[in-house]
Length: 57
Image 1 (cartoon, rainbow, N blue to C red):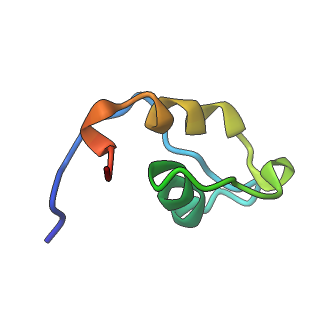
Image 2 (tube, rainbow, N blue to C red):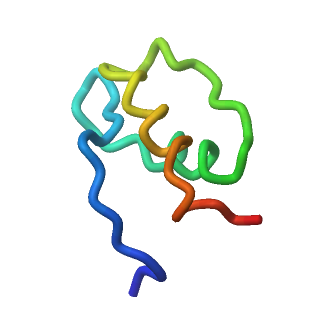
């Protein structure tokens, strides 16, 4: 069961359509995301970085 359920406007996906869960996890933990060229919509990562509810501090 997830600790939090938060609605977002977009989910980052790879070019092949898979959800980029590792990229989201890295953004939430403040880690750099490598190879954003493999994402169909890399701008969606900014949505997660801007959510204070997802801060792990």
